[in-house]
Image 1: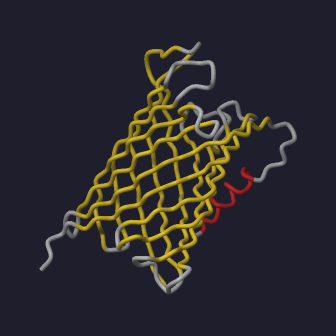
Image 2: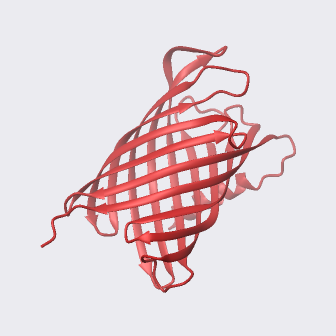
Image 3: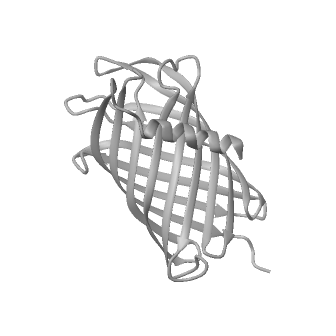
Length: 245
């Protein structure tokens, strides 16, 4: 618990800064996401999440991500996933070069379910290979760094005791991102994502969550930040393909 508390405190220190010498660029974005976890057997399953993000609300692309993985189920509430992700980061207005990124990622995810509260947490490690870029052109080679992520997700049913089909629920989550590696100089803190919204559980394995997210990100220079006000729409689907006895 101590590590999680330190990460959350670290994130809050950066999401609520005194902006004295810092330069903060405020933007509006829209994020669409689809998450699928499919359980194939008692022990094995697959993971896939897809993301489409627009900046200046819907004016132009910001990011596209495809992230598959293989999951090992220790039990119904604890699972380990490892996978690969491909991301495309689009340039600022007036520039043209899209930067590709290849990632390896590993994750521990655990859940709990009580009356009037459902939680999900994960710790994720990413190995990021970002293509080098200069003067609006791609260069040979990659910049490499590690990134650690911790997510806390809370869901509170509003019209039932548990989240089940036809349940409206309140959703809150916060995710802290920390950089590491030789090429990280000024931005050990990468970003914090704070989300609050509403969700609806359509079936046992399908829900949608819509709400507001603030993404507060420190750029590599160290004193430049992005504060993105985001309309976030995510769909979550959990499938169980185990043979029924």
